Image: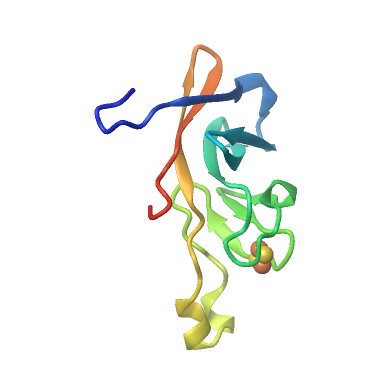
Length: 120
Ligand code: FES
């Protein structure tokens, strides 16, 4: 346990998430997706913040995940929504929600996540 009370949760073996793949897991009661992009691992909420699309069925586009429903693009590391701003009305642009991302690490061939708080 960390000094802030958070814990690292075991979610999968490294070999279960090959390069270029996505895997849905559960940790601490939350549904998450783990992505492997070029040997770097990322963890984020399983449901798209827009309308709940299943991100495990999405596509990796570089270091971004593309939602299968309306093709929003989220940065794997920061969760920022990269949907092309130029085609959206100004009011709508402000409503684009970030993807909630979680810290992830590899320890002895196992992947562990530390869940971000709901408000993070
Ligand atoms: S539900 Fe994901 S972009 Fe709409």
